[in-house]
Length: 107
Image (cartoon, rainbow, N blue to C red; front, side):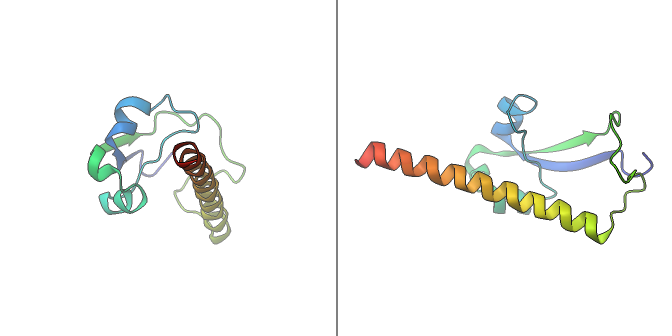
């Protein structure tokens, strides 16, 4: 790996303390505090942390042998399309969970 073997990022404090490395489905990290708070506003109450992520070892190369830190337009598009779908899936899950809680509480 040639570029950026360490990166600075931001996380919700609860995720960092209780879930990092344990949560099924992983945890989100963000490029800035602003991005964190826009996507996870509860971090204003829970707190948030600055973390350093270190690339220790590449365990499997991707199919296009990404090494130089640059993605093609198509790779970026595919990456963000996947992120959007995962966010939509989480939103659906949370919406369904809240609807069930509302039903349980309010009848």
